[in-house]
Amino acid sequence: MKKRILVTGGAGFLGSHLCRYLLSEGNEVLCLDNFYTGAKDNVVDLICNPYFEIIRHDITFPIYLEVDQIYNLACPASPVYYQKYPIQTTKTNVSGAINVLGLAKRLSIPVLQASTSEIYGDPSIHPQTEDYWGNVNCTGIRSCYDEGKRCAETLFFDYYRELGLDIRVARIFNTYGPNMAVNDGRVVSNFIVQALTGKQITIYGDGSQTRSLCYVDDLIQGLVTLMNTRGIHEPVNLGNPTERTILELAENIISETKSGSSIRYESLPEDDPKQRCPDISKARKMLGWEPKVEFEKGIRKTITFFKEKLSITD
Ligand code: NAD
Ligand code: UDP
Image (cartoon, rainbow, N blue to C red; front, side, top):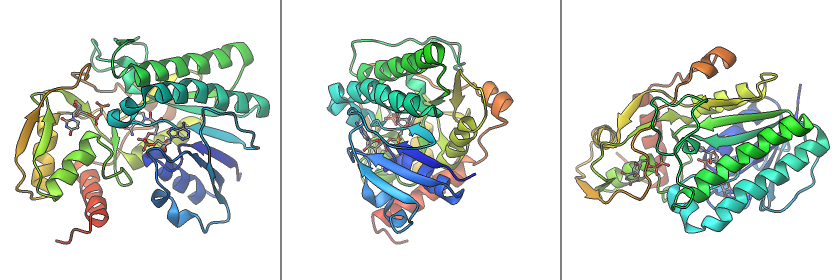
């Protein structure tokens, strides 16, 4: 049945894909964004669709709308941007969660929180299962994001326990794909842009830290399946369990782009997690979901996107 769905952070990387997918399924979509890291360009092709609306709004302020579901994605996800205005990052996570939860409570509707693998911090168990409580510094430069997201989860579970709200919490692991901003600062977009423009590839630390990268289409399927599966009132990891080092990623991207770029080693940022890999047994069992897109295919599509963005011809 056609639903009216609010996507906060809808003009961002994941939000723009989610809006597009929800529209393609016949829903009406309200895309709310303050355009801090998102861009109208990401959704410009949707503007002529009468079932799509853009609302310029900062989610740290309350908003009154009539919708059937909420996906709460509003929050800068790149360390560069969430660390630039850390107070606003915490406010977006905490006040933003309170505002979307208040809206969901008034309307008695399901609300999904885009949480993160960052709530595990620099993990001491590997791969990370949902019952791991994490290893997070509460006063460091990543804390505005990590602790903000942890507090948002707390709020979601208290609204569930105290008020019976129909919540979902997705713990998203590193995701990549088209619609990442050229200057986003996250590793995949940085490496591809550097490789395509002949700049040195900047590896922070010695490149031995690991990440597990999920292609955006898989992640969106996971989010929508989680939202539409009844009664999952517990956190669920969503990500691709294929782990690689950052050095391997740089080498892959250099090879896929046939770039002549060399590698430059820079200092590792404070509190940068050494390893990250999701245990997705729960998502497999409860949602019947697992990633399908192979890394080589996903990275090629992402490279094609950046070539177009940067007007690079072969
Ligand atoms: P993004 O930065 O591309 O998108 C975030 C969007 O939220 C942007 O459009 C931004 O303008 C908007 N926004 C920021 N603060 C806002 C505010 N106060 N009010 C309204 N809009 C605001 O990031 P993304 O990768 O698309 O991530 C989306 C969500 O998923 C975030 O909550 C992020 O924490 C979560 N997440 C993403 C990843 C990933 O790898 N992409 C991993 C874990 C979690
Ligand atoms: N990284 C890097 N070079 C870059 C950007 C990031 O080596 O130009 C590293 C970063 O230090 C981290 C990993 O790549 O170890 C992933 O960084 P990203 O910012 O994408 O996300 P994170 O998982 O740290 O939130």
